[in-house]
Amino acid sequence: MPKSSSSDTPAPTYSGAQKSISVLGASGSVGDSALDIITGSPERYRVDALTANRNVSKLAKAAIASKARFAVVADESCYGALKDALAGHDIEVGAGQSAVEDAASRPADIVIGAIVGAAGICPTLAALKAGNQVALANKEALVCAGDLVMAEAKRLGKPILPVDSEHSAVFQVYERDNASEILEVVLTASGGPFRTWDKEAIANASIIEALNHPNFSMGNKITIDSASMMNKGLELIEAHHLYGLPSEQLSVVVHPQQIIHGMVAYSDGSLLAQLGAPDMRIPVAHCLAWPHRAPADTDRISLIDIGKFTFEAPDYERFPCMQLARNALEVGGSLPNILNAANEIAVASFLAGGMSFGGIAVLVEKVMAEFLRRGEVCAANDVADVLALDKAARDVASQLLRAES
Image (cartoon, rainbow, N blue to C red; front, side, top):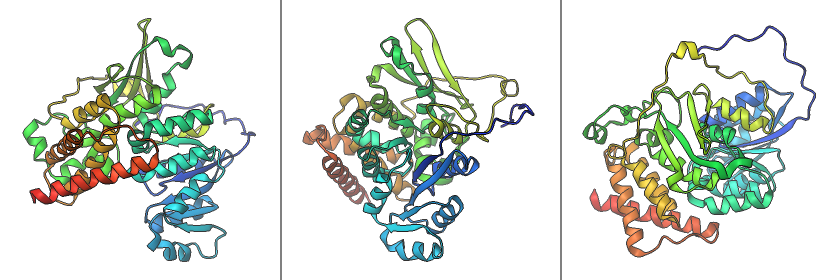
């Protein structure tokens, strides 16, 4: 992506306070983007804690390079390897889920929640309960436990800062003083690798084809969700919690160039949009500097070089996962949690060669139908309820897989 020309005049010297940042999920793509921004502006940011699931080598290198104070690996069996890798460095080491939550709870100006999957729910809540500002990339925290997370954020009196490019875009053009005049929030989607494929071809797509995202380099699970457009369905559920809007005021438009990331329509006819290169460092930089803005070595766009934007309506028939997510949003209660758990099992099975790409939506729909049949979709009272239902939904999905194998 070409960068716009910049002035030769040097930026003014920064003399403000240095922010302390903790990154939960530091070994993933969002973690990479965050650390790039943080280490590129050491006068503005310093690292307190970093966590990773089990990538000891990458975590240790990042902790040393960023001069982190605390490094945690979620997999307890990796504790010895991390301790050895950080021997001789003044960095505290921890392991296990409780240590991840300790990292989230340490005083920090911003905690970036970038853990993939339902494993990010408890650390997100731990960060909020400790009084920390949360910048959230973990979809599942809102999809599975949105009511609980938003209640903690309200108690804290600090907004959740969205790291997803789409929600960051909406956040930047969402006029809170004029919230009653908002008609619609619009999320954009690239359409993924199967935007122009027919339904049968999509259902039979290979793992390699599904992992071939046209714009972003992400982890496998997130990339598969993008290919199925489940990610956009999950983002609709997130938007419901972040902005308090019902399903009928949330929409998706396919925008292959991925330059416009989100829009807000107002009652006076205005449609406000945020534009930026498909570069995750941009929403990360926005979160880190919020409520201000700060220079960052991120990709810039040239509208002249881009030339034109195109838009398409989403196809819920070719991409049934998106429709299943909208159904879960409309039913409410714990159905989004069930949807998410079933999807995680289905995606893992697809990546392991255990089912077709089309089978992902089929399994998710069956699991949702089973819990609706049982009448077990009431809202969770606490995080224990969330985790118990997450496990129950995974168990049902796994049982269905075994029955079909």
